[in-house]
Image (cartoon, rainbow, N blue to C red):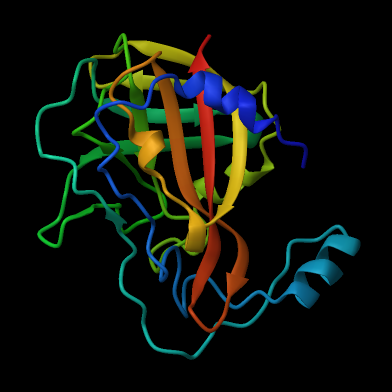
Length: 229
């Protein structure tokens, strides 16, 4: 998979004011569980890739992980502007995912819908159609209810693809992918992706990269940035 340079993403993100204190990180137990996202080792991935197949392995028998969340200490206030996104579509990947508003849980972490067939819009940031800031939509790559969710395919984007977001008011907003990043959670600070200012853009976040059987989690986050077409 060919990714566009990160400098392109930086230009799409614009200014990073107002959210420097926001610590955002999809948890170490993110995206999937022993019955939802089976252990995938490097060897099985390599063998399957060589054969042109998707790796299939038996479920893990380990403990049930907690539902992954995102630490989001941003003050709870209404979205800056725009309309709540209701559906995200990426025709190139065959993705059509309903989106629901999510907020901040009692433990200070942003909520992620438990079913990987559903995405969550971080409702304390801008909606689609806003004239500034990032509209952030998050979903699991896999879950107990849906072992392989649509957002697991985000890692296959190369840049230049079209993302159509239908808002709750029925309006459609078209974006073009400018950056696809796979970044390790251990060193990742997602705060810059939750900006409220700068040029308007869309950010899609899920888990990806290598599966860690010990942690029952993916080791990385996949972050897609797209700008209005």
